[in-house]
Image (cartoon, rainbow, N blue to C red; front, side, top):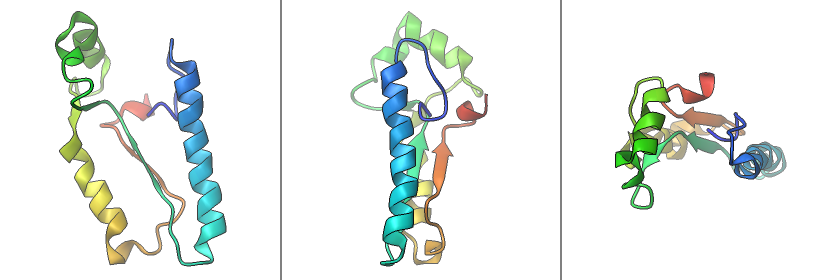
Length: 107
């Protein structure tokens, strides 16, 4: 999600994520000729072991209220996108940048 928006106080982090998007596109062009697909999943806010406690803080609750559906995703919310990309039927998907962010990047 940070690849698509500049977020206050983490501008450098956003720049690195935008670089991953361009790296994905460049590698898709270069490696496609060898039958290798390169795609990126761009998750929104996902509850993980690292940030689990944050979502119960005042700052975390405020951030959740700013999200389109007022919720944080789970790691399992990314499963369907991952399964799509590893399926044999997805061989024509190359260079895709897929936002799995509950609509956050649209704002």
